[in-house]
Length: 79
Length: 257
Image 1: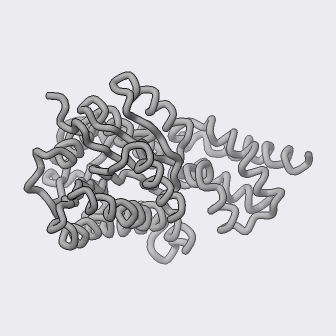
Image 2 (image 1 turned 120 degrees about the horizontal axis):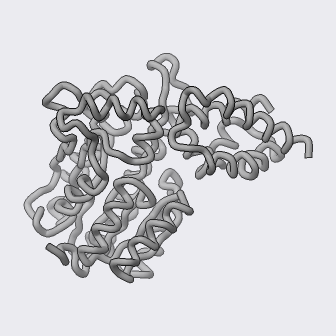
């Protein structure tokens, strides 16, 4: 959970990292040592939500976007 | 002018968006057979469809340039499709923002270096043997003004782009005698998704434009023009060179935006 939150927080603030999370998720899985379940959340619901983010996310929107992604992660890990 | 690349086969690595997309479109308009290579599948598909409005000899291949087996596949697919490679354009890059040196994480360093520097090394390593067999070619490595400036928002990005410029110089020294011209383009700020993303806010982008001596940042098509020149036979006596295309920002002292 904490690792996924770290990953999405970086992806929201840093478009460069976002691209790696979107298009080279296997590298992120390895570097953050994610479990299979976490990897599935990254390549599933998180990837879908990252694809919809504006370029860039405005700094004023960081808090709300981070909260929204936390909900996505919570929901995905519960199901 | 048209047909400046007639009968030439070009691989455009990082061709899905930004300067890569503009280069793909321009190359197709100039008669080239183009293989668009990128890891961003959805945007690459858009570039492919746009390119096909101007010519049918264009295709795509998914590649993560940091993976040697994927780069080998990219070149194999191109050889099977077109039978040769005359032009390689290296545009794949990522700009991740970091803190100053002591705060840079090893994984940030590795991710940036793997794509920006090792990726171009891989694509050149995989392509050059085919160019030698067919008598030569042209390689254009697209670096960044960060290669020569102390841009302070991502030390690994600066170093990767400086490395790419020097990779160009050394490789040109090694392969120009075998008919392969290898050159580097250094763009200043250009209006691409990467630039907008790394600038981090629309306000910052507006400020960048106001500070620029031209009152604007570059268009991807303006960089594609430079790349086209280097890819074409018009640059037949150019190898091991670096072309700065930043709208005069360097000489105005206003490049760090």
